Length: 387
Ligand code: GDP
Ligand code: MN
Image 1 (cartoon, protein in one colour):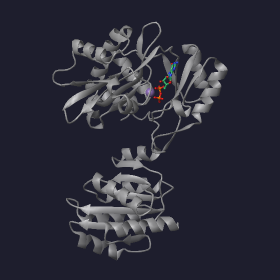
Image 2 (cartoon, helix red, strand yellow; image 1 turned 135 degrees about the vertical axis):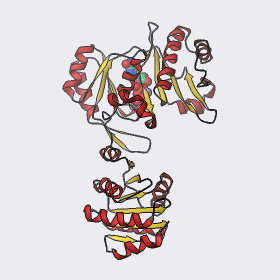
Image 3 (cartoon, protein in one colour; image 1 turned 30 degrees about the vertical axis):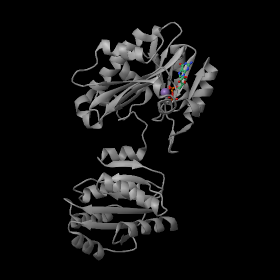
Image 4 (tube, rainbow, N blue to C red; image 1 turned 180 degrees about the vertical axis):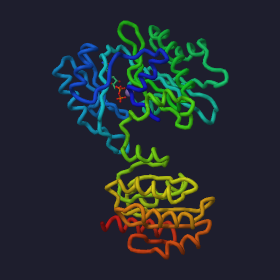
């Protein structure tokens, strides 16, 4: 689960990392109420899971109530794009007391899998894209690799801060924050905990002006309280939310060919092949192993709710899952769900012959079987283009 900025800040605050006082708002009036409470000037910030909000008008300073109204109205009607061009409509803003900035730094922890250690990155060049700093000024980033069984000592942390050449005035504050950041990253089973920018104020205080925290879904059971606090608040893609409730691995895309495959690898290849033959996938959906009729109904229901879908490509390679079971599942699912688009099915692997026979017996212009992945992809794209 990726936390929104304000959730990340609430999470940081639990570990004593200083953040600015503020509150969330879903309407202009709520934004005004928060601003009046924290005092001017305030910063109004779009809450979406995308970086670079500032450049897209998603972060604005307001000096008085009129400016809060104007900027909150603007930002709440904004659609912020990620680097792939996907749009995220802003449904919520975070309004916080504006900070005076003397310097902007970058700090993060992630996992370095090959070193089997936690990787800390710290730079005096903050507030900008860290990939850009890494590319143009690699020496401006100080790295630290922490053995998880040893942890991060204060002495090591201080050496790291010194290596990053932060302003000496920021040293004590940065050390304290980084030790806390390490704790919240490890104790929370996070995959990423990032502060960009971490700022030094003119009066010598260090604090987090942004927060990016990604918590490992597989460890959710260890942090029930944290998950209950933050889950469901994310203004997700509606389709992704519905799919997650059904335990399906689903990612919404912008195209017209709905995709169901078993296994993440095959699902990705299916997305690729649809693109390759000139189509646009509507989604990525991994139905997983043991795809029975109920799971097929769930998967088809999620895809069916996407009004862009003009054809549905089911690509199954039977392993432990048998193709005859899948075929029965598809036939049963078609009786239970009224599909908005025809199905194109490719079945291969365990019991493929039996599975194909079942589909053959039920073939129509709504259920089209194809012998292999490429032909099936072409057929699905052709149907989607026609409709
Ligand atoms: P991002 O663009 O999505 O990463 O959003 P950030 O929260 O990192 O904000 C982007 C930039 O806006 C920061 O690097 C700051 O330069 C500026 N900014 C954000 N909050 C404040 C604030 O309270 N005061 C001032 N002066 N600038 C701010
Ligand atoms: Mn940022």
